[in-house]
Length: 140
Image (cartoon, rainbow, N blue to C red):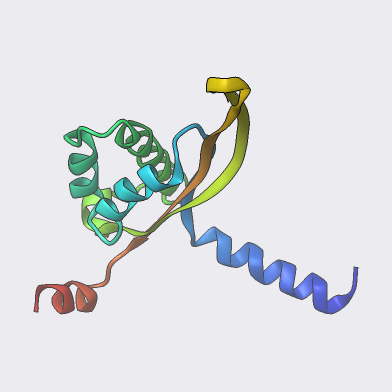
């Protein structure tokens, strides 16, 4: 491996150490339905996001709640001895990408066939801690 490539790989490793995230791959929900739930929690404090997801009637909120708890556990693993309440954790990003699509055929009248596309998605949640200046800007 070249020196430049090696140096950039080391920089990426260092950047990932301070990044707290969780991923859910091949979730069998359509991306459109999952994005509605992801938009509810992006930019919100972690405690408030957990509360929103717990009381949401959408089925996608159950999987998103579990994923958010996983991201919090990843944060705790990298920051031993720190408390979540003191660190002002919030959901920095929550984004949904489309994943594989299962294609099926539904019989239709007069010998025809309709295609059914069973969609799935990839969800990523990124957490970060707010500084006091950021909190003042939000309140203002």
